[in-house]
Image (tube, rainbow, N blue to C red):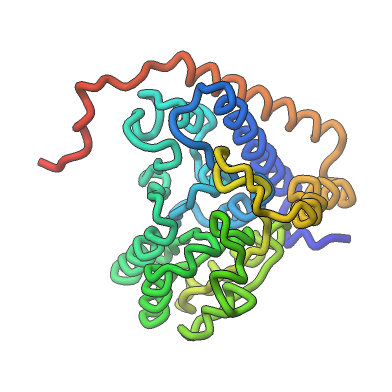
Length: 324
């Protein structure tokens, strides 16, 4: 029997729902992109949804996340709706940025989501700064910064980890190690075998977890969050996974060996959780059908909402940009 980490059936089904919603939403955006209906590029988390969903499901409502472009699942768990997601990709005035920023550059500070920016490690110092504010205010909150394996080779990653370590801040650094930094494989960007090894130099604990196991990611995040919340300081969580598509949809990923994709395709995180929940008697055929229908209905509603929403008015381009 698989370890369900004390999660109730409703919580387990919610994690499964968010995995399906994330995959379904991104698959639909890919179709819209191929039809020429998307503004900008398309970046998806196909094959690594368990990291964002599993980790975000372990957080408290008052915590803060700084997600990357492959963490739609975390945004959904934190309260972003499919309507907002599709409106953002279609550049509509009803989107979180009201149609005024790139399609993955959105957040909502009221829901504890710091808006993503493209240099992949830039948000880690921001998450660390949030954790510093929590410490100064003596608030039992934590910040979570998401990044990829490539981002761990940038200076701002190291600056954030060092600062957090020295001040023992309540921040988690969650790595989506999906084997490639755009087209650069791991062994061409670092000499150590694991991103987690980089934590040793800063004197903080690191955990390596199967990033395709949503429940394992949940458990690792829950433990690290509890440690951070009680004064134990930061933790680096390296989630091993694989990016199953190109860096973005304009990239055919021809540099990835086909055998590697086949190996990881057999570890699909959604199918894996399905097996686990079926064996535990949590995911019945009726529940699976109900969730599938709910996801399909929500996505269709969101696409229609976005397509019927107005484009932004150029006259309001500076609203909310400058402080007065």
